[in-house]
Image (cartoon, rainbow, N blue to C red; front, side):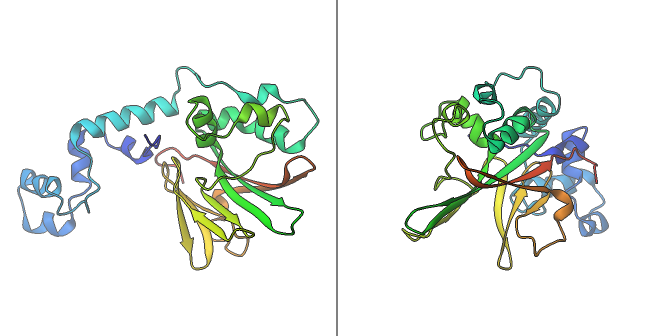
Length: 238
């Protein structure tokens, strides 16, 4: 089940307020009855099929409130298994782990592995999603305990946000729990599902760069890693 959060729901106090946001100006002009306007929204004439039913609206809103004000951090923190000072990438990931788990920070990890064959494998990984699936012991999940212990290097998977294997000519793009994978012209971008901010990974495109901080790190164990840190905005934040 996708673990996404739509922070925009918090701007609505009631379900009626939520429905009212979908009422088009034309409907207000020609339909004076507010109930009729909202019934049209419920029937899908103004919501493009994306409207939540009332019980779903309150369930998702409560979920977002829990994410913003987490009561208990139940997830295991794998960064505690690292050996301090031995690998700069693992140090950087450990420093970001808790903030990702409580979803106040969202980090996308780019990994580039240069193989002896001369062909590269690379990919983008949704860090929070990957950590959570490891905690849930999901089938095929990345083993973060082994990675922080130094027993396994981090490798992208075909199920991650993106995966590129030049040798086997495999290219895949996927949405994750937190991101939609998009293309802006020829550039790859990710849209955060919670606050709807665009996260660019191509330095040539600067319009959305205020949404992300980019950090490149090299290590003998992990190879070339780029961390894209996005501070998750609450509703109403600029």
